[in-house]
Image 1 (tube, helix red, strand yellow):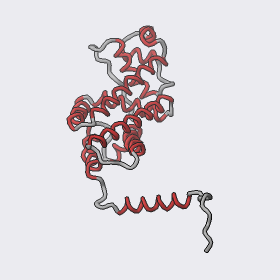
Image 2 (cartoon, helix red, strand yellow):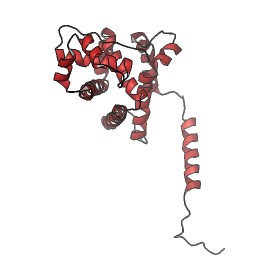
Image 3 (spheres, helix red, strand yellow):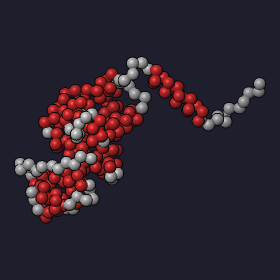
Image 4 (cartoon, one colour):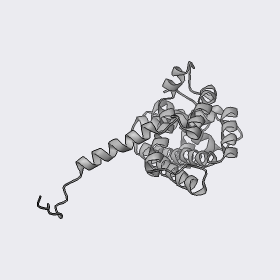
Length: 230
């Protein structure tokens, strides 16, 4: 994963500078190895002030979790309208370092398979499902046979971009994940979601038939019915 250190703008409060510095260090060094003194130095404060605001390293990590997850969910809701998506892309392109630090933070949590990661994933899937159901209800999305499964697919695609950022970037000829990769991926991904991929339903029909055959063969015999004499 590409390492990212977050700068500490002077106009932020000390608490916000500590939080942002911690997000960068947790993403770069890992949650266990990140050092409070190093976080304090990046934020331009004392280690004692870190403990004063957050109580402990676990308390600091909890605050970072809440902040990053909240930002991610706000972004997800913003993307549910064309205007919101435009705003998200403009914010990302104008301030890519801050967005990337959040993606790196989530990627680190998932890589370490931490309770934080499970919370992130569960929340992303639940929110994605809510967005799908709402989109189907208001007519902005097509009906779906299984909204929950679709939400999992969408969430896993997004999470792959977070956890496999270097692989995605390299596959497209870039040195690192960033705005250029987002620009390259934007239209193809929206084309897929808007128009689909196949030009007819041959694969869909074949899959339905295959699933129906498997379900029939796996079904237990109906012992309530007696065979009729021939």
